[in-house]
Image 1 (spheres, rainbow, N blue to C red):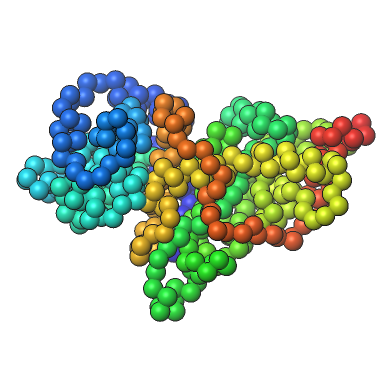
Image 2: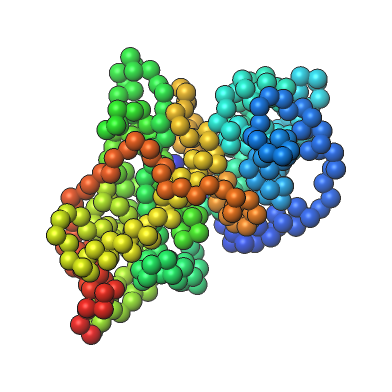
Length: 394
C-alpha cells in the first residue's frame, strides 16, 4: 500500500486551530459524566493488568487521564454512534460509546491479541476487531487537525524559538527520523520479500517530522522496510513541498554580511544533505567547529528519537513484532497512534510526565549513511558551524 498522508484527508470542518478544538473538547469534559461508567466497566475486566496500587485504576489501564479520554470520546462520538451496532458484552448488555472507545484504546495501547482483549472485557475477538476498526475510521475523520504543519508565522516562530533553546540551532523547524514497524509474515510467500529490510526483518516504515515538544508535525507510512531512509524521504509529500518552495520557506536569518540561513529541519546521516535538511558531519578528522556542530545537531535531533520511542512504548500495538498484520490497514493504525500521541500532548495530559523517555525506537537497526551531498547545503552547514563557534567573519 502507498503512503498515508494525513494532511490530505482533512475535511474543512477539521481545519480549525488545534487549541480551539481542545477548548471545545475541554468544555465537553466539564459536562457531568455518568458516575458509574468506569466503576461498572472496570468490574468486567478480568485477567492480568498493569501493576499499580490499584490494578484496575483507569490511568493504569489506558495510559491517559480521564480528561483526555473524555475528549477523545467527544471527537469520535458522531461517527461511532451514527451506525447502529449490535456490539454487546457476554451478558447481553450493549456497549456504550465509552465502552467502545475503552476497548479500542486498550487494543491499541496494550498490543495484546484480539482474543486476550476479548477475554479481558467479556467480548468475542471479532467484536474487538470491529470496534477497533470503527474507532480508527472515526479518528481519521475527526482528529486530523491534531497532526499538521504550523499554519501561521507566529506558530512557526514559536516553534523555532523552542528548538533554539535546546542547543542553539537557529531557524530550525523540525527533526526528522524513521522507525520500522516489525511484522511476522510468511517467508514462504515470495511477494513478502519487498518488506524484508537490511536487518533481515519484515517491516513497514514510519517517517516522522517532530517539533520541540515531541509532537508529530508530518508523517508518512506504508512504505516497505526494504527501502532506505533517503528513498522514503524522496517519496514523501513533504520532500516535494520543500523542493517546490512550499515548505520551510519562511524568514531567513542573517548570520553575517551576505550570509543568510534559511529554514530547515535536522536529520541523521541516513538522509541526504539538502538546503532544507541539515545532517551531521561524518568521517574522521573533524574540525573543532564541526565536532561542536555535531553535538548541537545530535541534541536537537533527539526529540524525534524520543517521540518515536514514546509512540511505540505507549501504543504497543506497533511495538515489538506484529503477528500477521493486515498490511493495507496497518498504515491507518499507525496514523491513529500518531494522532493519539499528539492529542495527549495537546491536552497537556498530566500523565505525560510519567511516560517513559527513551531514545531507542529501532532496536537492532544499524545507522544508515547517505553519501548524497548538496553543495549549497554543504556551504550553509559549514557557515552555520563557524557561526555557532564564533568563527564566522562578520
